[in-house]
Image (tube, rainbow, N blue to C red; front, side, top):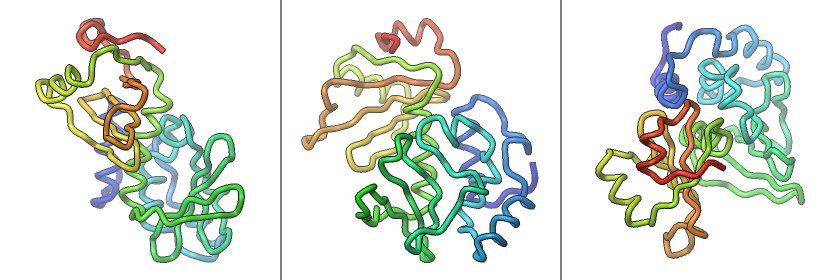
Length: 211
């Protein structure tokens, strides 16, 4: 791959850990395509977004597995925001302003600042796309306390905790769930997912049931 800056390295590290393989130049969108997009929009793309496209812009597991990242030719300006991501049923979309603030915009015309910098939002989205769109998806039948012990025992790292969403990672695997107002697992639904096949010993250890 071409020389990467710090932001690309962050995307690359996350993507490779989840894919279970090294990224190649073919996984990213060419600079010339992004240059044409900037010319069409008559403004520069945010560096964080441009780096995402250059790193994983052609990897469907991150670009379209759940929410839908705009292709470069689909990027557009609406109400002063660069729209780059759409909810999979068109209920809402996400855009970024010239100051790098990320907004969620609902179909009724309302919008609100997520209080999230673009880099952090995009990193979280890489995890969330896999959490919701992974090929291998299970739910765990372990109790919360049992899972908490395994987080510590096996070395799981929390990689996402925003609003009511919590995501943990161990190697190629993610555990994720929504939490209630008391920070407990919502409806006792804990998901164990991966882009690579999960070994039988892991399925047994975490008492996984295929979704």
